[in-house]
Length: 463
Image 1 (cartoon, one colour):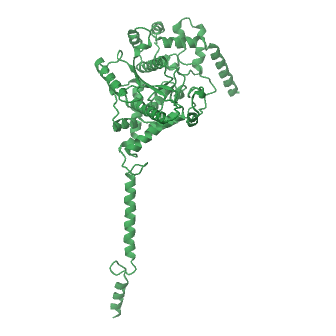
Image 2 (cartoon, rainbow, N blue to C red):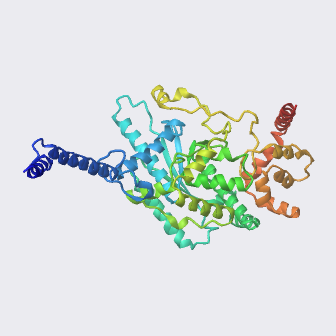
């Protein structure tokens, strides 16, 4: 009987869902349900946009965290922050957007258009209409005469570009299709071809062509009344430039090329897409249906092509590589011309001035870089300035021109044979020749003072 009692007692005391009177198993089931709901909710949040948390992300490495609306808003926010923080575009400006047909310049053109369109809406809605609307023009450098592509393909691409600009809507934007040989006075087609043929180094030829494009942009901007040039250079392109410039021995001038603003030119250059990756820009063009003209983009070889391939591999291994390269190079001290020059702020309304958050970049005060390479316009380092100070001993204009070039241009662009220098000099466009004469005669006394200060500073450091 005792045994039966023990068995009965053991069975009756055992807590299970069928005989439990305290409902503890019910609580466990409810707990399991609650935990399950939280787990499902967590999984759902992981599959939602990290910004709005209501829509699914678009997928892919560039948009894996954002939905379509938030992805576009985030990219436009980078552009808008760069523009406002560095006073790139003000209501009184007339900006020229350099358009090549690729995704970077396409997004730059689209964002500048949207910024102008919003300014126009605010102007129309304002009672007093005190804030003017900045002007926008578009420039395309036509390289038909030196391109290996068939002329009819390039003409068709130019027609596509005209259609892209005309479809932007109001305000109407003027398109400047500028043949690159226009940097010469008169017919410069043969001189341009002979100039490029005179450069034997592949990398040097690519770099010289890049400098000639900039001269063309400066020329059309100056003649058409624009006061700023917008380039679509993004973080991916800048990351490649950081490495390639280091390889070419351009480390001293590197900080000048990677800032948001570059005012060493007659018409300042601004880079509003400096914080955007080319993968993001490609995705935006795909999502918004922004038409691009990739036909005009030729493959790069030499150092530039190798570096681009190398950086692309790094980016595939780690999507943050390009940003890391740009951030690291951004720690270099910028030059005094890496900000918008001070202007008469009285012409800009007070409300606009208050909205502008101008970063006070610390200029490189130790060496005032007012002397630049006659080809690439890079600031000259100490050794280049020492060579330039001896221009008085040069006998010919071609010798003066070569002495005023940076070490990278002298190695990659100038002819190796000194006897060929006169012929090379005769093929140069007038803006490059004028820059060399300016360096030769106007800055010699300043150069000597700078060099003496540098040498005195070095001797004090050694002591």
